[in-house]
Image (cartoon, rainbow, N blue to C red):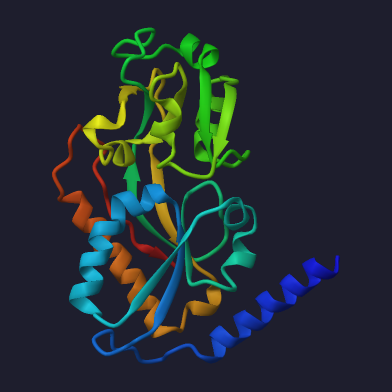
Length: 254
């Protein structure tokens, strides 16, 4: 109880400090501000290169501290956003907070390259029979929701708070995972896995930046959001290895 109370007090104090130090004017060309953003390794794989390039071009002294997304960020987003600048999560985890929709991505199934039981397409029956590797397993997870919409109760064998780990847990086995096409496109050819289309009409995931309302008047934070928007536009123009759902930029919601 005392530990939870201390965590709450520290988060509140951090939030007050951030409000008091919010910048009304922000010049990225000379600022040395550090921004803390929690995002998954999938998001880093898809947006990381574009973000890095934009920071070099626009703000050579600004530092971006990326925290690996974990279950704590997902289960208590409002608490998390009192201590960091933003969380990048698809719709389904967070509600009623300011957001900037970035880009959509379609779902594909990931299987071992030598899995002969799965051909060019995986069947609904196989999704129920094959053992699963699940990333960020929670009731609100978009991947979990996609399966439940189809009445699929997977045989979950491994749960990991990572996307990058998936190929190592699938290659050479009969396991399967549901992943984003954008992440799968970044995998090296020697990863020992391959993608197959879903046997159902999976609703595309909408990747989104979420932040606490206390940042609304912060000029530096508004600038950070524009950088994420520009990065999303950049990847829309990047050649992709496989067909994919067109990435689009959505406007900010008040």
